Length: 221
Image (cartoon, rainbow, N blue to C red; front, side):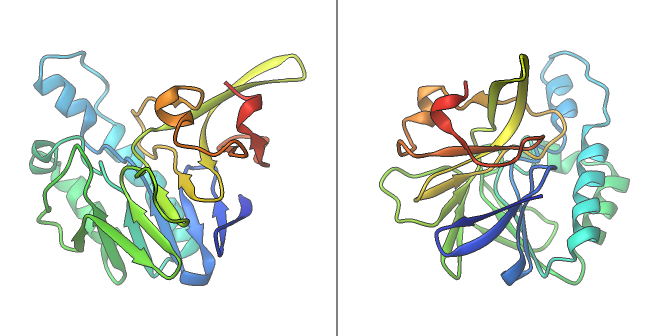
């Protein structure tokens, strides 16, 4: 767990890639991509072991058990496509409904899952809670306090002669971009212009593996 201050909020960057906001009892995860292995196989791609949905939900269940959030925000691309939701195994559907029970659950629209689901919860393009605004894709010129996902940021750096690569949280004074939470998700290097051009010069990363302190973006690849 890596506590840090963003805009006016005291947040925790969790090793799992989730974000926790204790003052609001709010857990946020991005890019679950549930059903990715099924979607790839359906479209004639490689046959991946079909355990990604179970693994992702197990990890989400562990964070919910640990923090008991009153609100959960899924920050878009929760399903790899809308057909993946329709083909979700009954055991996975029951697991997800159990996690949702008794708490506010917000589905933010993503580019993979732009429509509402039949699982309940709230279905929003974006959500503003206190001082923060949660949306799937970072918007240029946004006011401070934006929390987004979409890019699956990852970073590499050399520590004691050893190269370390990790998914990461990426932030500056205006925006915070979360890593992907899903089990079978890849990542985009924070040095890629699609990501780095969004950020201010003083931006920093926090790895989902040690060390989790703020590392200047200019020092990682």
